[in-house]
Length: 128
Image 1: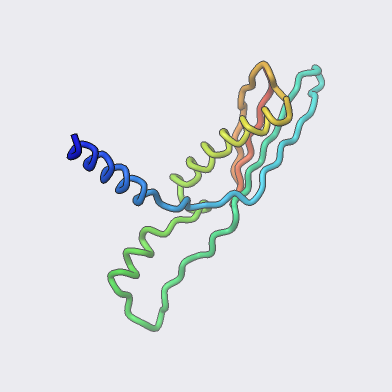
Image 2: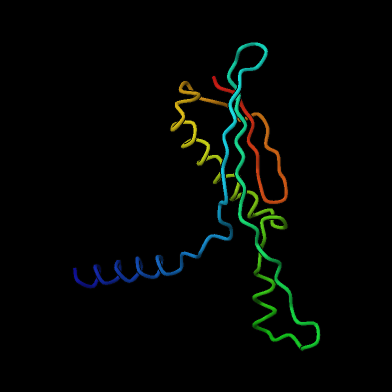
């Protein structure tokens, strides 16, 4: 029994220690609400992330293997489809919370369009 407990504890500790820092940090989020010409409620929700500086390598020095590995793993939202999808998922969860906080779209909502800028994603939709 104690071996099983130690195995589970060590697995948990390894899993927790391998959780990496997110590759982006939300700078701001904004919820815009309006009524369209037919009187239906619409929204636009914008999530912007903090800028990530570009990683540059020294041009006058040879590159080490470690620097090359770090450079190949470096990602920015502006350049990474994976991070854009992660940001879009984050924006959907933030939208759910914002709509709940504002008591808007209580019967539910649909996201109709997703628009991308350099460091932001905009979700546009309507209430059901």
